[in-house]
Amino acid sequence: MSEPGPLELALRAARADGRKLLVPYVTGGVADDWTSVVSAMAAAGADAIEIGIPFSDPVMDGPTIQEASTRSLGRGTTPDSIVSALAHLDVTVPLIAMTYYNLVFRAGHRRFADRLAQGRMCAAIVPDLPLEESGEWESDAAAAGVETVLLAAPVTPDDRLVRIAARSRGFVYAVGLMGVTGERSSLASSASVLAARLKAVTDMPVVIGFGISTPAQAREACEAADGVVVASALMRRYLDGASPEAIGDQVAAFRTGLDAG
Image 1: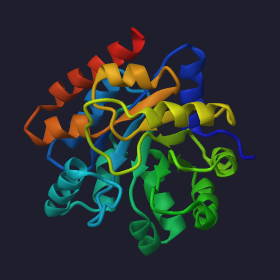
Image 2: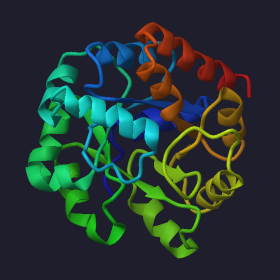
Image 3: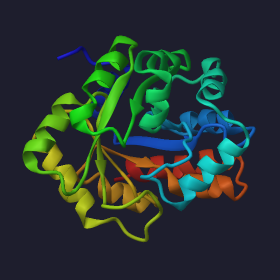
């Protein structure tokens, strides 16, 4: 097994301190001030930040993230423009790329991974790359210093959970419900069940995403998991015109809710 990278080390250290992990998301390039959102999230208590690299067919994303991706692509955003914007950004929390395999394949594994590293992104989530086909990418990414975060779904069998947890780096992404990303009025019961199943087979940090919409839901999810990813709830406000400072305040409310749990 390879040595833990910056993302995993940071999340393990935070967990050891008794902190629940908060990983907010922003779509790269969605507006002129998107990097200010990254800075505001970091200042508000994020433990890591997920940066969406937009793709024209985001199959796992719901309406909000799809809208953000469309808006970003319409502004001419490319992986290179995101890398360039992040390369000189003064944030100290780990940055995680979230994108789709078409972009990785088109660039070439090692070239894409090197590009992420140039943008100070130390990890990547590629949700449409199956476990059976991801070995070459994982190896090439690791050679560039990029940790590959793998996803597990509520219907994933126990033996496959073990394999996913063993190969995932940074954390294991527990997909809280079957379906696409998006805000929900309540936490899916499948989220906590999956987190508990993962915690039974791995010491890797387990972070729940998909449908975490309020601080109360985040706190509930962290009764079983080590942390949460919050995406659509933040991006909806940003798309509707909220300032980076307002998004930072929203992240701070999640931070406060988790710390009070």
